[in-house]
Image 1 (cartoon, rainbow, N blue to C red):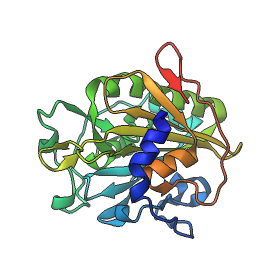
Image 2: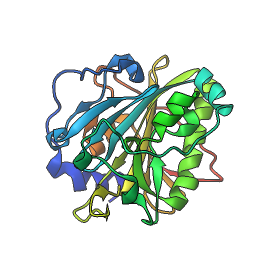
Image 3: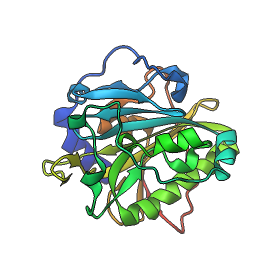
Length: 257
């Protein structure tokens, strides 16, 4: 049984039917066609809150105390401007969330995990968006070698593609697969996998990339529809996407279908 089939089998019991209409959003510019992802797994509705940041949006779960996804419209101009924007490690809990539904700095303290950005600070072109990217509502517990290795390479590759193509819609998020998911401080769920999908609206092309949350160089390349089934979302509810190959250097990662 291949990797995708194994993941699909692990999640089939919790998949629900897709809702019939596109999801509205208070920050529609982050999404292709202006439509937020539609939840297709009803259990994800519990304690979920959309948070609009300066230049990206998050669907946060009070159950996992992490984002379920973080979405941005990444343009050539933003990438070029972000190069000259200083990074300030202003990690902070999200004040708009109830205390019992959000991660706190102490949850990550001495945990051995990085506070891993979903929408990366490296995409943020100004001081406000940089600060927003450091909210814990945009973070998951991430293996440090993963965060600073294969994941950083994927983020860099997406920025290169945004410069090449002009703009991309990017959605990043965690997966929690299995019945014994680890927790930080008994509160914050540690994802088993992390995904990033990219979509080129002008060319109607897209793809998704999935990695285990461990020290690895393996990247699983999927379609947007496949990652949607695994995560419980219809990411492009009004758009039928095709397939795009992301130019990740093969010397750094191993891409598998």
